Image 1 (cartoon, one colour):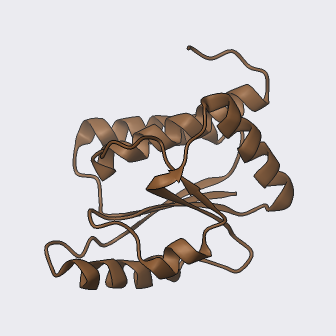
Image 2: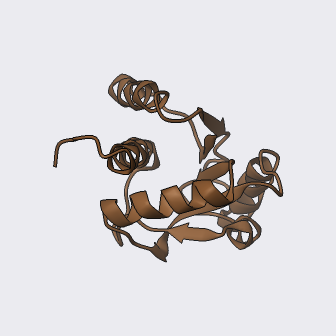
Amino acid sequence: MIKIITVGTIKEKYLKEAIEEYLKRLKKYTNIELIEVKDEGLVEEQKAINLEGEKINKYLSSKDYIITLEIEGKSFTSEEFATKLNQIQIESSNIVFIIGGSYGLSDEIKSKAKLHLSFSKMTFPHQLFRVFLLEQIYRAYKIINNESYHK
């Protein structure tokens, strides 16, 4: 089971369609759930981080293998990510990816992560990043199952 917890909601139709497409494709390989928590908006930065962290925390269990998405995290090639995801599945049946809000993630949430993952040193819109993450998870399953997929 994979859960993706994200801060904020998607409003753009084209992003919703892309997300739905990858969720549909992934159902062949795993149960997957997308959870959105409310973005605190333009309040004081630390207050927003803490409030969003409290909301995220409600969806976490001690049995989860938690992966936070952070600019400072570890980077992988798609093949390395597939290998890592496969190893994690052996260790834990509950994998949780967490995408923070515009201010990032609370230290409490970061401290619960077993893997701090980075796709790039660049900053991406959080809404668009969901598509990137879903695509890479899908690509990982294609690699794990030795199935062809575009390069």
